[in-house]
Amino acid sequence: MNRSIPLVLAVALFMEQMDSTVIATALPAIAADIHTNPISLKLALTAYLVSLAIFIPISGWMADRFGARRIFAIAIGVFLTGSIACAASGSLVEFVVARFLQGMGGAMMTPVGRLVLLRTTEKSQLVSAMAWLTIPALVGPMVGPPVGGFLTTFLSWHWIFLINIPIGLAGIVFALKIIPDDGVRLRDKVDWTGFVLSGGAASGIVFGLSVISLPVLPPVWGIAATAAGVLSLVAYFRHARVHPKPLLDPKLFRNRTFSLSLLGSNLFRVGSGAVPFLLPLMLQLGFGMSPFQSGMITFISAAGAIVMKFAIKRILTLGGFRTTLLVAAAGAAMSIAVNGFFTPATPIALMLVILFASGLVRSMFFTSVNALTFSEIGPESAAQASSITSAFQQVSIAIGVALAGGIVEVATRMNSGVLDLSAFHTAFFAVAALTAFAILPFLALPPDAGGAVSGHTLKRAGSRAASPVRS
Image (cartoon, rainbow, N blue to C red; front, side, top):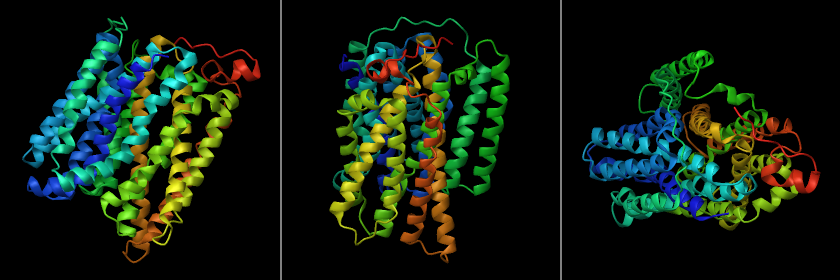
């Protein structure tokens, strides 16, 4: 396998993932500098998520129409421009607009980067390639808090965005130099009705849930936006059934492996995606740690994720996707539940061991499910499958954060308005139970699912490998 391509993609995606989490640590400093309050500045977080939700659905069409390599390089450039605009912002409006621009670039980087990987990697090497590409999603949220705390404390919040300049420029150069031209040039016109409906569905749901979980606006706004998003989703599916070339083709869900993998992965993300939100808050508000101290503890999960990268291929070859995903989902659910027993008296060493193990099983799950999702998708459907997967990821993460925030809020109200450790413990137990539901879709998978990718079917079961679905 040519590791240079996944490494180039991973560096760019790491920049995006870290940036999306590092800003949370610096919100008070940014708010003071641009003369606003941290609550209002949360609109910048919401603007970024909404921008992702709007432009992810069209990313696949753009990659097919103009070439994945070109769009990926342009996406880095747009993200870099947004980063510079964030650093130069002097007001709330300027900062929100800059974050929206960043989101436009981020919306293209993840699905198009995954598409490049699918088109340049043999099926038998997909697991190893996905292991590299999965690292940013696992390491970024863990690295973000300590890096943000360090830069904000010892330098300036502006450096949170300025450090993207050398990374982004290097990413553009290497993307154009190393990533081959895929030669795909779609001539179909864009489905504008589908773009409006799909963008409205994803952004409505993400915006609504973000408002509900981050009280920037009255909750009724969040409820109304979520309802509008759901209605747009229903309208999109009705539109897609009759359109000859829909922006996102629902026919892909007829592929059993794709649909079960997508369902299981998003159930998992709803639960596990809440952990980067809950754990730092519990360590800071419940344990009295500083953002930098809590970040140095949560960072250990990233180390577990990196270690698993070197073992995942062998694990899948021995156990196959079905067994590996069942074990990983169960292990992740248990590791999340254990967080609900942490107290200020818990030895730091014990917490580090548990969080390291959590990083191992989460990395095992994400690398496996990302490879399985595309194991039976043909090249002509890869762009749409990547866009659909990325859109659902954003929605599931938003649901997870909203759910975790809602549970903490309800538990606090039941405790006479006092926020203590019990509220966080309740939230951890709830999201752990929800994560465990990810086991159910994978129980329906055949034992040899994705055998051509894992090598398990060919080497262990001896049965026929699944052939790509041409949709």
